[in-house]
Structures are given as C-alpha cells and as structure tokens.
Length: 469
Image 1 (spheres, helix red, strand yellow):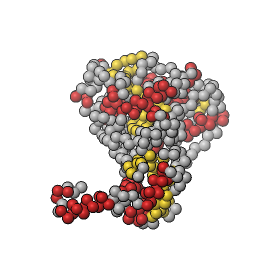
Image 2 (image 1 turned 90 degrees about the vertical axis):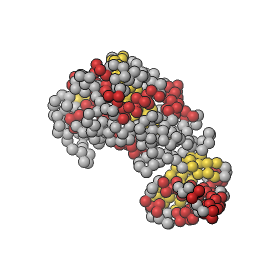
Image 3 (image 1 turned 180 degrees about the horizontal axis):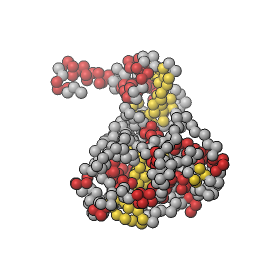
Image 4 (image 1 turned 135 degrees about the vertical axis):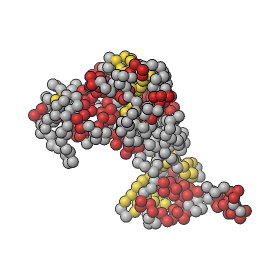
C-alpha cells in the first residue's frame, strides 16, 4: 500500500476520484440485488471474465466479486472467455453461488447473505471464537440426548475404571475415575524426537503440580498438545486425555491395556479435539487464542444496494473437507473419529463441529443460532446395532485398509476399538478381523487395487498376520 502523504496533489485527487467512482453499482449488480431480495428464481449472467474485470474498474461490487474469484485460485480463471453465472442455491434461500466455467470445466464459489435471519457469518480471521464451541456444546447437551449422550444401555460402552489424565488447571497428570468428564485429543504424532512423554522414570514428577507446564518441560511439550490444554481451559473443562502423556510409553502392559480400550476412552470423552492440520504434533491447533499459530482463513464481503454477501472461509491451501478426509486416512486416528460421540475439527483455516446428529461450520449460521439449516450430510459414525451387519463390517474394513500406518504391525491394534464395538452384534466376536459367526462367508473377501499384505509381526501378540485375514 502506498501512503497518500507521499503522492503529489494530482495523484491524490485522481485516487480520490477513482474511489468515489466505485461507489455506484453497475446494471449487473443492480440485477443481482433484485435476484437476492425480489426475484428468488432469477439467475444473473455476469458475463465473461474480461467483462467482469472491466466493470471492476468502476463498480465496487464487481471489484469485490473479481477479487473474491481470484482468491479461489482456479487455473481457468485466467481465461478471458471464462463465463460467470450468479445463482441462488437449492439448499437455502440465503445461500448463493458464482459459477465460473470454461472449456467444459466449472467451479462454484459460495456466498451467503450476512444478516441475523440468514446463514452467512463473518468470523474472526486470525483466532477462533471459543464461545462458538461453547454454543455447539450447550446445544448438543440440551437437544441431543439419546444420540450423543444419555444413551440406551445397549449403545453404551462402559468407561475405564481409572484413567491417567492431564489436569489443565494444575498442569500435571492425575489419576481419576473413568466416569469423570474429560476431553480427548486426536492428532498425528509424526517424527518428533526428544518430545515430552510419560515413562516410568518421570511419571511421579509429572504428577506434581505445574510439572507439565513448567518451563523445563514446556519447550518439550508438542505445540498441538499445548494448544489443546489452552482450549480445554478456555472451555471451562478441567481434564484432557492425550495418548503421549496418558499412556506410559515404556510400559508394554500399560500400553496394551490402553490400546485395547480405545473404544471406551474415545466414546466416553465429553469432546474430542481433532487436529486435522499439519504433519506432526508440533503444528498446533490453528487459531487457538494465545497459541503460536494464527489460522490462515479469510473471507470476502460483497456489498449490494440492499444487503451484503459474505464468502465461506477459504485460503490458498485445501478446504477443511480435504483435511478431515486426510485424518480418516491415518491408521490410528481412523477409529478415534469413528468412536467419538462429538468432535471439533481444527483445520488450517476453519473450525467445524461434528456429532451424531449435526455437522456445523463456523462460517454458516446453524441450529445453535436458531436457524434450521444443515450444510452437510451426517458424518461417518460407528452405528451401535443389535444385529450383525456384514455390509457395515465390509465397508469399515475396506476404508481402514486404505489408511496409512507407520508400523504395519499395529494394523490390528489400531482397529481394535472398532472391533470391540462390532463384537456386540456379531456372535462369537471377531477373529483376526473376520466375524467368526460368518467366518466361511467372510473368507470370500477380495483385495482391492493397490493393496499389499502386511507382513510385519503384530506388535501386541507377536504373531504374523495370517494370509486370510
């Protein structure tokens, strides 16, 4: 940006005239305004990309639309002949899209009406609004009994008798009954040598007040865990379960016990915090207040004579949906997401809520704010059923086989929580991944493309996986 005090009087006058000339709305934007407020079935052709760029020189709304479409960084946007159409979507009367197409390729960018009775929300750009998470939690607590909590007995997994948890107020490890309210963290470890872990040698020290957050250990605590502690504190909760600190890492018996009860740990957590961004535990949770990583998401607003449209959150990287998809591709986090009753997902630029009933994004005004509006289909959840469902079993195994595991020998361990749930509806249980009750039928499985046999030894049992599993 050029400081106006460094411009000559002629340039200052010219700049002010240029700004003033952009205060009017062109005929196309007047038509968009009518389509928004008066003619709900009308589509408006914005013309070719070259036409929009020309109108951007004198129309403030076209200038914003041009800037908005450029930010989405689609390669065919550079074409002068790309055609743009403004439409109302079928999902909501307050949601619109600008579709750009060229040579058979098209892309739509969403815009939403910014007013209290509509779905558009202008969110904080650098840091999350913790009150939004509180509203989601409160609504789920009050409205989703029988689905997300207070479940029927046959849908309930008994909590562990005891859990080692992080007390975020005291900054140390504490041993508590499994019935206590706690949050859990789902994240990727990555390669982080010398990071803080719980071992036999330091567990008593880590149970002392302030030991985890002490300066000596603070530099060794991965940033994602540190941000999770900050978030749990800001939500008014006290306890956090994180595998790196709540499992004794050099105790094979303790590790085996915790791995085999992952279903109980994650399904009984009050809220699971999902770190969808980054490649290791030092990436942090983007946007957590007082954290080291502000998020990168931005929004664009477009003013029209009778109202304003706001875009969804976007940035130069992938949208949140791509990041959450990658989380489901990680071997260990696959079951953590399926087992959790409700999760809050931190991507690089946005914050999302997923529970057994609803999915909300922070840039869409949803049910907690009083509008009956859902943007997504329900997320992938692990259904608790009373009768065997071979299709569900086959789908889970297929999806899990597409995940990535650093240690192939952990394949069965990282699926054990889901198996524990499936055993309830399959008589005789699950053996090496196959339902025993339908063992002959299950042996007829076929491998998909690009699937390789895991030859490694099972890290828990010491046995090689059978060729038929």
